[in-house]
Length: 88
Image: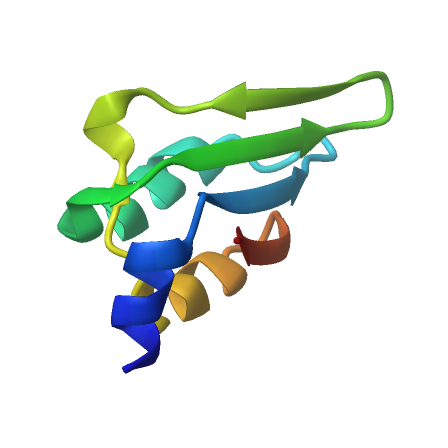
């Protein structure tokens, strides 16, 4: 199935976040969404940008995820989320 293919061939899940400085809860929201899917094999990169800077952050080993459809949708639904992609 598609989830298994993502686990086997996915190199990284990349979440692009645009933060305008108003929402201060986005990190805890992201953690809440990701926690049930931790313990997987796919690393997560956070591509963060605001009006002043841009940075790519690779999350630690504890945040490797199982890239299910549910996780991808919930990450995409976060208010600060621009894109959620699995790179192969």
